[in-house]
Length: 327
Image (cartoon, rainbow, N blue to C red; front, side, top):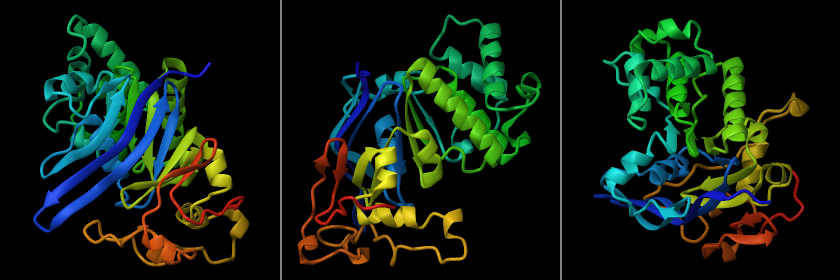
Protein backbone atom coordinates (compact mmCIF):
# COMPACT_ATOMS: atom_id res chain seq x y z
CA UNK A 1 0.00 0.00 0.00
CA UNK A 2 1.29 3.44 -0.93
CA UNK A 3 2.26 5.73 1.95
CA UNK A 4 0.09 8.86 2.41
CA UNK A 5 1.40 12.07 0.89
CA UNK A 6 2.92 14.43 3.47
CA UNK A 7 3.72 17.36 1.18
CA UNK A 8 2.52 18.32 -2.28
CA UNK A 9 3.96 21.38 -4.01
CA UNK A 10 1.99 22.52 -7.06
CA UNK A 11 3.23 25.21 -9.46
CA UNK A 12 5.10 27.10 -6.72
CA UNK A 13 6.32 30.57 -7.75
CA UNK A 14 8.39 32.71 -5.39
CA UNK A 15 9.43 36.07 -6.82
CA UNK A 16 11.48 38.96 -5.43
CA UNK A 17 10.24 42.37 -6.55
CA UNK A 18 13.42 44.46 -6.55
CA UNK A 19 14.20 47.89 -7.97
CA UNK A 20 16.27 46.20 -10.69
CA UNK A 21 13.38 43.98 -11.72
CA UNK A 22 11.51 40.81 -10.78
CA UNK A 23 13.73 37.91 -9.70
CA UNK A 24 11.91 34.64 -10.36
CA UNK A 25 13.88 32.61 -7.83
CA UNK A 26 11.35 29.76 -7.92
CA UNK A 27 9.23 29.47 -11.04
CA UNK A 28 6.65 26.72 -11.48
CA UNK A 29 8.10 24.06 -9.14
CA UNK A 30 6.02 20.94 -8.48
CA UNK A 31 6.76 17.74 -6.57
CA UNK A 32 5.30 15.56 -3.84
CA UNK A 33 6.80 13.57 -1.00
CA UNK A 34 5.16 10.73 0.91
CA UNK A 35 5.43 9.74 4.55
CA UNK A 36 8.89 8.27 5.28
CA UNK A 37 10.24 9.26 1.85
CA UNK A 38 13.46 11.18 1.13
CA UNK A 39 13.51 13.68 -1.75
CA UNK A 40 16.81 15.10 -2.96
CA UNK A 41 16.71 18.66 -4.32
CA UNK A 42 19.91 19.28 -6.30
CA UNK A 43 21.42 21.89 -8.58
CA UNK A 44 24.07 24.60 -8.81
CA UNK A 45 24.16 27.57 -6.44
CA UNK A 46 21.38 29.99 -7.40
CA UNK A 47 19.13 27.33 -8.89
CA UNK A 48 16.34 28.00 -6.37
CA UNK A 49 16.79 25.02 -4.04
CA UNK A 50 17.02 26.92 -0.75
CA UNK A 51 14.30 29.42 -1.70
CA UNK A 52 12.02 26.45 -2.36
CA UNK A 53 12.68 25.21 1.18
CA UNK A 54 12.14 28.67 2.69
CA UNK A 55 8.90 29.04 0.70
CA UNK A 56 7.52 25.77 2.06
CA UNK A 57 8.15 26.78 5.67
CA UNK A 58 6.95 30.36 5.14
CA UNK A 59 10.22 32.21 5.68
CA UNK A 60 10.21 34.52 2.65
CA UNK A 61 10.78 38.15 3.61
CA UNK A 62 9.98 41.28 1.53
CA UNK A 63 10.61 42.12 -1.25
CA UNK A 64 10.02 38.42 -1.85
CA UNK A 65 6.65 36.71 -1.76
CA UNK A 66 4.93 33.59 -3.00
CA UNK A 67 3.43 34.75 -6.29
CA UNK A 68 1.54 31.58 -7.15
CA UNK A 69 1.01 27.89 -6.61
CA UNK A 70 0.07 25.77 -3.60
CA UNK A 71 2.01 24.10 -0.78
CA UNK A 72 -0.19 21.34 0.62
CA UNK A 73 1.03 19.91 3.93
CA UNK A 74 -1.12 16.92 4.88
CA UNK A 75 -3.88 18.47 2.79
CA UNK A 76 -3.62 21.99 4.28
CA UNK A 77 -2.44 24.84 2.04
CA UNK A 78 0.46 26.57 3.79
CA UNK A 79 0.81 29.34 1.20
CA UNK A 80 -2.12 31.33 2.62
CA UNK A 81 -1.81 30.29 6.25
CA UNK A 82 -1.63 33.10 8.87
CA UNK A 83 1.77 33.64 10.50
CA UNK A 84 0.53 32.53 13.94
CA UNK A 85 -0.59 29.20 12.50
CA UNK A 86 2.76 28.77 10.75
CA UNK A 87 4.58 29.44 14.03
CA UNK A 88 2.71 26.54 15.62
CA UNK A 89 3.77 24.24 12.77
CA UNK A 90 7.45 25.27 12.64
CA UNK A 91 9.68 23.23 14.90
CA UNK A 92 6.89 20.81 15.76
CA UNK A 93 5.36 19.27 12.63
CA UNK A 94 7.73 20.96 10.15
CA UNK A 95 11.41 21.59 10.93
CA UNK A 96 14.29 23.02 8.92
CA UNK A 97 18.02 22.58 9.30
CA UNK A 98 19.78 25.65 7.93
CA UNK A 99 23.15 25.66 6.19
CA UNK A 100 24.44 28.24 8.69
CA UNK A 101 23.82 27.01 12.27
CA UNK A 102 23.92 30.57 13.61
CA UNK A 103 20.56 31.10 11.84
CA UNK A 104 19.20 28.57 14.36
CA UNK A 105 21.21 29.22 17.54
CA UNK A 106 20.89 32.28 19.77
CA UNK A 107 24.46 33.37 20.65
CA UNK A 108 23.52 34.68 24.13
CA UNK A 109 21.59 31.62 25.40
CA UNK A 110 22.98 28.35 26.69
CA UNK A 111 22.32 25.26 24.58
CA UNK A 112 20.12 23.80 27.33
CA UNK A 113 17.86 26.85 27.33
CA UNK A 114 17.44 26.74 23.58
CA UNK A 115 16.71 23.02 23.40
CA UNK A 116 14.35 22.95 26.38
CA UNK A 117 12.43 25.95 25.03
CA UNK A 118 12.17 24.28 21.61
CA UNK A 119 10.45 21.32 23.28
CA UNK A 120 8.25 23.14 25.77
CA UNK A 121 7.06 25.70 23.21
CA UNK A 122 5.12 22.87 21.56
CA UNK A 123 4.61 20.71 24.67
CA UNK A 124 3.77 23.17 27.48
CA UNK A 125 2.96 20.38 29.94
CA UNK A 126 6.39 18.76 29.58
CA UNK A 127 8.47 18.89 32.75
CA UNK A 128 11.87 20.58 32.60
CA UNK A 129 13.72 17.40 33.62
CA UNK A 130 12.00 15.41 30.85
CA UNK A 131 12.85 18.12 28.28
CA UNK A 132 16.44 18.12 29.52
CA UNK A 133 16.68 14.33 29.25
CA UNK A 134 15.41 14.42 25.66
CA UNK A 135 17.87 17.21 24.84
CA UNK A 136 20.81 15.16 26.13
CA UNK A 137 19.64 12.17 24.07
CA UNK A 138 19.34 14.33 20.94
CA UNK A 139 22.87 15.72 21.35
CA UNK A 140 24.28 12.23 21.83
CA UNK A 141 22.35 11.09 18.76
CA UNK A 142 24.28 13.53 16.54
CA UNK A 143 27.67 12.69 18.04
CA UNK A 144 28.20 15.43 20.67
CA UNK A 145 30.61 14.00 23.29
CA UNK A 146 29.80 14.57 27.00
CA UNK A 147 26.33 15.70 25.89
CA UNK A 148 25.02 16.46 29.38
CA UNK A 149 27.97 18.72 30.19
CA UNK A 150 27.77 20.54 26.85
CA UNK A 151 24.20 21.64 27.59
CA UNK A 152 25.70 24.36 29.80
CA UNK A 153 27.82 25.77 26.95
CA UNK A 154 27.09 28.75 24.69
CA UNK A 155 27.20 28.46 20.87
CA UNK A 156 30.53 30.32 20.61
CA UNK A 157 32.14 27.56 22.71
CA UNK A 158 31.53 25.04 19.92
CA UNK A 159 33.35 24.68 16.62
CA UNK A 160 31.42 25.34 13.42
CA UNK A 161 30.83 21.65 12.82
CA UNK A 162 29.71 21.10 16.42
CA UNK A 163 27.28 24.02 16.18
CA UNK A 164 25.79 22.42 13.10
CA UNK A 165 25.31 19.17 15.00
CA UNK A 166 23.48 21.07 17.76
CA UNK A 167 21.24 22.70 15.14
CA UNK A 168 20.47 19.29 13.66
CA UNK A 169 19.66 17.92 17.14
CA UNK A 170 17.20 20.80 17.74
CA UNK A 171 15.48 20.10 14.40
CA UNK A 172 15.07 16.43 15.33
CA UNK A 173 13.79 17.07 18.89
CA UNK A 174 10.07 17.02 18.15
CA UNK A 175 10.25 14.23 15.54
CA UNK A 176 8.60 16.38 12.83
CA UNK A 177 6.36 15.05 10.06
CA UNK A 178 8.42 17.01 7.50
CA UNK A 179 12.10 17.88 7.77
CA UNK A 180 13.79 20.26 5.30
CA UNK A 181 17.59 20.03 5.39
CA UNK A 182 19.48 22.78 3.56
CA UNK A 183 22.99 21.36 3.01
CA UNK A 184 23.31 20.62 6.74
CA UNK A 185 26.45 18.46 6.56
CA UNK A 186 28.61 20.80 4.46
CA UNK A 187 30.74 21.85 7.47
CA UNK A 188 31.10 18.34 8.89
CA UNK A 189 33.86 15.81 8.32
CA UNK A 190 32.95 12.66 6.41
CA UNK A 191 32.68 10.36 9.44
CA UNK A 192 30.25 12.67 11.24
CA UNK A 193 28.42 13.26 7.96
CA UNK A 194 27.88 9.50 7.62
CA UNK A 195 26.62 9.34 11.20
CA UNK A 196 24.16 12.18 10.64
CA UNK A 197 22.89 10.64 7.40
CA UNK A 198 22.38 7.32 9.18
CA UNK A 199 20.43 8.98 12.01
CA UNK A 200 18.25 10.93 9.55
CA UNK A 201 17.47 7.76 7.58
CA UNK A 202 16.58 6.00 10.83
CA UNK A 203 14.28 8.89 11.80
CA UNK A 204 12.45 8.64 8.46
CA UNK A 205 12.17 4.87 8.74
CA UNK A 206 11.04 4.74 12.38
CA UNK A 207 8.77 7.78 12.62
CA UNK A 208 7.59 8.28 9.04
CA UNK A 209 9.18 11.73 8.77
CA UNK A 210 9.30 12.97 5.17
CA UNK A 211 12.66 14.54 4.31
CA UNK A 212 13.69 17.10 1.70
CA UNK A 213 17.49 17.09 1.42
CA UNK A 214 18.81 20.20 -0.38
CA UNK A 215 22.36 19.77 -1.68
CA UNK A 216 24.76 20.07 -4.60
CA UNK A 217 26.49 16.81 -3.55
CA UNK A 218 25.18 14.04 -5.80
CA UNK A 219 27.10 11.36 -3.87
CA UNK A 220 25.08 12.15 -0.73
CA UNK A 221 21.80 12.08 -2.65
CA UNK A 222 22.70 8.76 -4.28
CA UNK A 223 22.95 7.03 -0.92
CA UNK A 224 20.15 8.87 0.88
CA UNK A 225 17.25 9.83 -1.38
CA UNK A 226 14.40 7.83 -2.88
CA UNK A 227 13.58 10.46 -5.49
CA UNK A 228 15.47 13.40 -6.94
CA UNK A 229 14.48 16.78 -8.38
CA UNK A 230 17.14 18.56 -10.43
CA UNK A 231 16.70 22.36 -10.47
CA UNK A 232 18.08 24.97 -12.83
CA UNK A 233 17.27 28.71 -12.91
CA UNK A 234 14.29 28.31 -10.58
CA UNK A 235 12.70 25.37 -12.39
CA UNK A 236 12.67 21.60 -11.97
CA UNK A 237 14.29 20.24 -15.14
CA UNK A 238 14.22 16.55 -14.26
CA UNK A 239 12.49 14.41 -11.65
CA UNK A 240 12.35 10.70 -10.91
CA UNK A 241 13.61 7.81 -8.83
CA UNK A 242 17.17 8.54 -7.73
CA UNK A 243 18.71 5.41 -9.27
CA UNK A 244 16.94 5.93 -12.60
CA UNK A 245 17.96 9.59 -12.85
CA UNK A 246 21.59 9.10 -11.84
CA UNK A 247 22.07 5.96 -13.96
CA UNK A 248 20.38 7.32 -17.10
CA UNK A 249 19.86 11.12 -17.00
CA UNK A 250 17.50 12.50 -19.63
CA UNK A 251 18.20 16.23 -19.35
CA UNK A 252 21.56 17.53 -20.63
CA UNK A 253 22.00 19.59 -17.43
CA UNK A 254 21.58 16.50 -15.24
CA UNK A 255 24.07 14.65 -17.40
CA UNK A 256 26.51 17.56 -17.08
CA UNK A 257 26.20 17.59 -13.27
CA UNK A 258 26.87 13.86 -13.04
CA UNK A 259 29.76 14.06 -15.51
CA UNK A 260 31.51 16.69 -13.40
CA UNK A 261 31.67 14.46 -10.30
CA UNK A 262 35.16 13.01 -9.70
CA UNK A 263 35.30 9.23 -10.05
CA UNK A 264 38.01 6.66 -9.50
CA UNK A 265 36.98 5.16 -12.84
CA UNK A 266 38.13 8.34 -14.63
CA UNK A 267 41.50 8.85 -12.94
CA UNK A 268 44.03 10.54 -15.19
CA UNK A 269 41.37 12.16 -17.41
CA UNK A 270 40.03 15.70 -17.34
CA UNK A 271 36.76 16.24 -15.56
CA UNK A 272 33.84 17.09 -17.81
CA UNK A 273 32.40 20.52 -17.22
CA UNK A 274 29.29 22.40 -18.20
CA UNK A 275 30.34 25.32 -20.42
CA UNK A 276 29.42 28.88 -19.50
CA UNK A 277 27.79 30.19 -16.34
CA UNK A 278 24.32 29.98 -14.86
CA UNK A 279 22.31 33.00 -16.07
CA UNK A 280 21.36 35.93 -13.88
CA UNK A 281 17.85 35.59 -12.50
CA UNK A 282 17.24 39.16 -13.74
CA UNK A 283 18.19 38.30 -17.32
CA UNK A 284 17.07 34.77 -18.11
CA UNK A 285 17.35 33.77 -21.77
CA UNK A 286 14.16 33.33 -23.76
CA UNK A 287 12.78 29.81 -23.93
CA UNK A 288 14.78 27.12 -22.17
CA UNK A 289 17.05 28.74 -19.55
CA UNK A 290 19.75 26.13 -20.18
CA UNK A 291 19.81 26.79 -23.94
CA UNK A 292 23.04 28.91 -24.06
CA UNK A 293 25.00 26.11 -22.33
CA UNK A 294 23.32 23.11 -23.94
CA UNK A 295 25.01 20.94 -26.61
CA UNK A 296 21.61 19.80 -27.93
CA UNK A 297 20.01 23.25 -28.28
CA UNK A 298 18.37 24.27 -31.55
CA UNK A 299 15.78 26.80 -32.74
CA UNK A 300 12.97 24.91 -31.00
CA UNK A 301 14.60 25.64 -27.63
CA UNK A 302 13.86 29.37 -28.02
CA UNK A 303 10.39 28.47 -26.71
CA UNK A 304 9.98 27.26 -23.13
CA UNK A 305 9.57 23.49 -22.70
CA UNK A 306 7.10 22.08 -20.18
CA UNK A 307 7.89 19.47 -17.55
CA UNK A 308 6.51 16.33 -19.16
CA UNK A 309 6.30 12.70 -18.06
CA UNK A 310 8.14 10.67 -20.68
CA UNK A 311 7.42 7.41 -18.91
CA UNK A 312 5.94 6.50 -15.52
CA UNK A 313 7.82 8.36 -12.78
CA UNK A 314 10.28 10.13 -15.14
CA UNK A 315 9.66 13.80 -15.85
CA UNK A 316 11.92 16.08 -17.87
CA UNK A 317 11.75 19.70 -19.09
CA UNK A 318 13.48 19.34 -22.45
CA UNK A 319 12.61 19.18 -26.15
CA UNK A 320 15.55 16.82 -26.79
CA UNK A 321 15.82 14.40 -23.87
CA UNK A 322 18.42 11.71 -24.30
CA UNK A 323 16.29 8.61 -24.14
CA UNK A 324 18.26 5.66 -22.83
CA UNK A 325 21.28 7.89 -22.16
CA UNK A 326 23.78 6.82 -19.52
CA UNK A 327 25.78 8.94 -17.12
